[in-house]
Image 1 (spheres, helix red, strand yellow):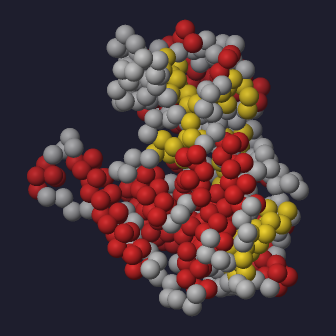
Image 2 (cartoon, helix red, strand yellow):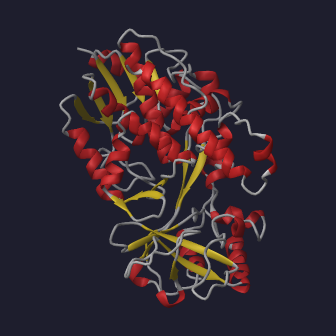
Image 3 (tube, one colour):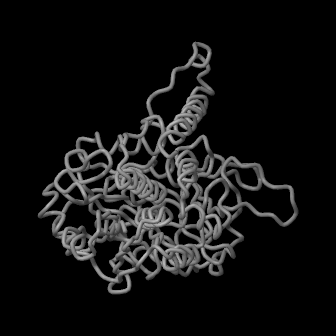
Length: 452
């Protein structure tokens, strides 16, 4: 009987455990949430979505949509559970966080080929011996527990092993002033069906309100970094206060961009805060792109400056937390097995990807590669033209760990005809469409051979 240990029941670990168990591999899933939550966790269920409830775009001409096509072909548990517990979010797949995590927990806990061990793992080599397993997948995430982190530092890596991440606040929908807010999805034509609202609620700001808000973001008290470290954040997930510090217009061209969010009278606000439903009932909203380092008291003070937030009550306030990442290029093989211990694999964000969908995709990738190895079959590098393949290529070639989301910049460039190059207005869209078409064809061809 073949056994595999999976450490961590986050997005990557849940996908890996489910993939292997569905192929009659006995999985020992070790998760320590019920023993002790880490600083970013709120619930004991698996696959917790900590920062936001969005699994990003479903459009197949987007990077996240591309990943979803490939993940579906691999039998993604995360996407299936996400769709079952989705909430309205335009072209994005957003979920009711608690129902989603409960669903993933139920499916994994009831799987006949999965044994749950509630504990904090420390030494994967000792666990392999204890359970007489063939391999171990470390999918402990960027907030790996202290014992396992120390083992990784001592046995695998002595590089700078951290980045910081930030979480956006969630506001009680009943405490907002809707006379100052309006529903509209960016660039999406409103539905003509009576009673149907857009998925996003918007708080518009005029120039004076915006400038005052940015000044307070800059001046507000922030949570200091831990242990005298420097704050190192992902460029794709910067706290809104750091955007403000980079210049007064930065946020207005990022999370507070007004483009496509015309007011009911047709005018365009100077800036706009978007709110996304946290659950299907719309009883709570998270502030899109409003990850923050502000102290709790300052968050309440500053965010109440947003129009419609004057009497707002926050269900969850934002926070910052330290993340750990491997320098995969120097420490791992292309299948994410350790160069030092070839029966120990790493999956998910700890490998150097950023984002829920990306983390889950890496769990599927590692499980698929390990399964091939366990069957005595040749393990191959995945085409760099595919979504999963380009992410793997990125983390395996980046000189230093700089976590990245999926984006078309990671894919090889697509050739354009002379006419397409000259069409400046549509050139970017055409390039994405062609890259997506090539990726789907490449993955289809590869998977037909690799997973036959």
